[in-house]
Image 1 (tube, rainbow, N blue to C red):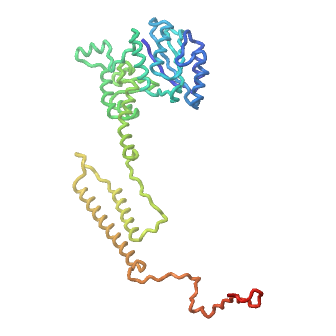
Image 2 (cartoon, rainbow, N blue to C red; image 1 turned 180 degrees about the vertical axis):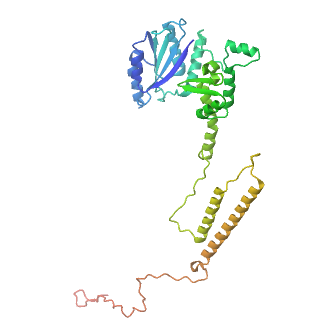
Length: 378
């Protein structure tokens, strides 16, 4: 039965320094395992990606007695070919525990493309696990069984056969009802408590307590549907539609109206300012007069809707009247009268030529000098 663990590191050298001295058998994919540290660093330097994540580590463990160290190393080499093709991988087989296991150190940069190895989250773990299970089945090895979604003890099965339910089943029933009505652990815990179930979260472990029966049970005993990972994944699925809707509409999660953009330097017309004041009064009156809903339905009462529609019509009419007055006042100004002759704007520095004509001095022109040697000008 082979299991895997996947992690990443910012120091490839540290990973190799830990795995190499303890190795009984070692091999390399796309590199000489003796010089793996140097060759992996050279690849990262060529592509200029020697910072941040430098390596990924993969631990492949086997059931005691199923494989020899040599067989385990070969299986590790096959796994490296499946999940890290094009990357340099050093495979180190350890036998210092009761179960034989491999440490695979994967260089983060692909030799051919220069792209980094992507292994993040549950999806990557699932892909590596599936590849590992396939290799084990091909070699006749056992693989871990999928955990039961609902797990019953012998005593519980006996009660079920008699048509009775246990206190554990009561916990399962309450959890099933509550999980679909909450989107975070705090609300989930509070609602469980209201229904007689207490919950404690410690690390990766959840413990449920039946308050009336005063009995405790771990989530793993109830089944995988009641463990931390399943519960929290349910919270994420419930919040995803809201986030997608907000991102699609470009709106934030709250429903508060956005304030209108204003420019204090803009000189507003008095009539339009009066309209703005009317709008503000209507907004204040609406905020102060919250509509009350009928307790027997989810609709507003007809008389309330009629009142609001009447206010809206009056407000719209007032806005139109104020806007018309403002526009007419602007059009009636002398500057906008098309029949008024346009007066040419004169520069204040210019003087009246008729008035200052006598004051202008005669222009003195240079007269030809006939006494010069070259004679009169022709």
